Image (cartoon, rainbow, N blue to C red; front, side, top):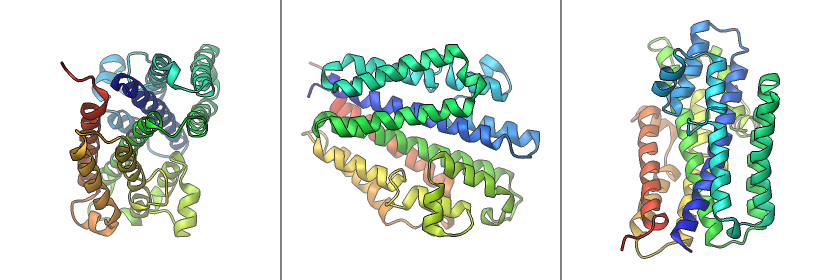
Length: 320
């Protein structure tokens, strides 16, 4: 496969994942805003979302202090924000158009219709009338794109690069969300108080599980009250949950093996090393040792390094 084609397929799937993640985070923030909490805590939640995407400075330069409507506008409509839903779906569609011949008709039409419907809905004011309906629609379209991809594309190099893009982006997004939420809670919790004993955080962590469609799974696995340490264990180390970090990195390793070339041995080794640490890790050791923030910061650095190595090994044209 041409590296240029692989690059378009890889980023096409990263962008649809990023659009879905943005919609999920906005959705959970709008739900949390309904809880009876101090105004400063509400502002902190919106600030945390900007921090998750590393967009605090850019937002402040454009809008000043974070207000809910301004953050929603910035994260949905702002064309110059690379993490906005508008920018992500536009980039997804442009990458798909560039490799139209490598996609099935059903997949191209699904992506193209998603983009066209987004433009119509934004002009029609659907976001302002019913933000929850709008965010659910984004999630549904992302699910539909993945379903059409898995059920109409050949299981060949094209599909493996698409899976790599989806898995890396979702792993990055999941780790960022957990890191920001745990760091936010740790900074506001009374000194010396265990995070698991703060009953007031039940609804926040339930909302976060709902955000990643894992609340029902949590109840099935633990059959008990929602606690931060168990949320971390589920979303980081539970290999039976498709969106858990360990399951995503396992997918990255497996798909790397299927597209391996004579330059990718070190990239495969690093993916395998990261997977081994997750497969044999325990949440108690993580919390007692480096702490979740340090663990996730290290994980993000290694995932980003994997993405860079994948780009160098497979996606960028070789210089002549």
